[in-house]
Image (tube, rainbow, N blue to C red):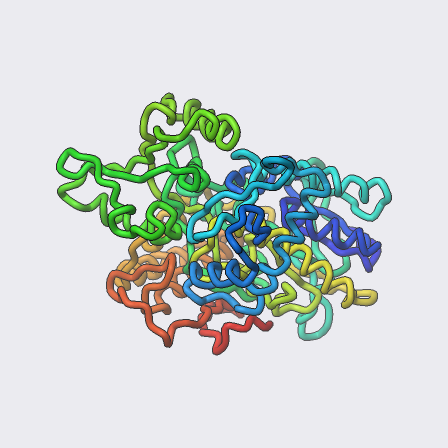
Length: 531
């Protein structure tokens, strides 16, 4: 294995967060490598549909960054760092203007960017490009990044997989680089320099139940966790209320559909019951996602109801379908064989977003020196439940924040230690499936201590039986998720405990998971995130 020049920043992941970090480093004349298993065009970010939040106030509703910050904190049940959320909300309009400037074709009227309603927000705050916002954002950012690739400031390494972090120093507390594998040749290379992790969420831990791509196996997260990188709020999995089943995963029916007037109902005693509108007359079908998913969970278990929830879009106008939701209509026709303009869509909750992840501070630093994280792989901004429209914003701002802080704190020449031997043994698919089934059995919309303890015991038994290193690392991270959920003896946001249904002030703290031979869970004493 070779070691190449120091001073180049290594970005793992080429979605929104990775591209944002690369562009902002390049604008500061700092070279970087953009390392990813798949090219940017196939990143998870492409699948994002609904839009990106920012208090532009183009709709004349007296919106503000302060209101955006307040809505984000409230939706996250006050579990996020207020300073980080405030900075996110303040920068949001500037980020949308930057995107507009590089060619993102946001929906407009008379030249003004239009904003739509999204869950958990009373103001129209979500800029969008029909129902394909992720695609057009990624296209514009890829083109912007290519300008810097042509100058040699960004070196793109697609089809390269992250293997391990490299450390320096006797205490191994400083990141010195990464080892990556060329998936075409099998050759491994050590790249020295600071590292920004942007490898996305833990979709691969939940095959068949997630709206995200399971090409993101979760192995990178398991690897860095086993190497001592701290994670936070791993119990917080967001179930999106409106998904449909397709081969191998769930397909998202964007919240934009409800923002445009879609209504949820079930049949109660044979008649349509628009339960969200009855129970929550203020926001109705635009309540935060954790609330709607939980209501669906209980409605489906009501003996008077028909055992199915439907999304009714039949009242939407032809103009709305053509100008705002054309791709969504096409997807439903393709996968379900029905036209949502004429028939209701049968929907179910599916795992959509991971609020928990790598523990970072307001600058996106981890507990390891020279190591940053941004996007869905990190724990920041969303607390116990993500506000719709904040995921793309969080990824773009996170990549920018990490790049700008790192630019002022670039390490000198780094001498990496040899690092662990790369494990090339494949994990047994049966073991992967068993881990997934145990997680799903305990980390559903409703949870209880007995089920959580039972799943942990089964994982511990599985750990005793396996010697495969990849499988063991996945079990460590799975145990951290279950123990975080067990540790939190309350209900808050996406974490609902039937045995502890109340929200308790003493638990308004973040869970932090750490591995040093054993999986340990502690509570942070302050919401201010600080490695």
